[in-house]
Length: 93
Image (cartoon, rainbow, N blue to C red):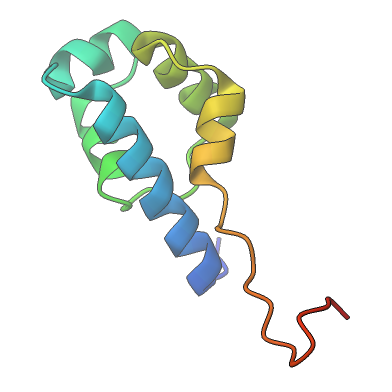
């Protein structure tokens, strides 16, 4: 099976997701959070570092639960920043 390469946007989204989860984990160990979420510490490490930029939904949901985050919070935090308006009149096309 050949995987389609990820786009730059997909890689950046994975990095944002990793930052959100790492920040929410705080001082807790990777092992503690991973065990609580029911995943391996190595999987959590890869997600936090962006090496798994598109984890399965249920993995993200389990991590959100283990970290006390809502899925809305995780989704909003990992979403791309709003596009900057570069038109001369400041109006969107």
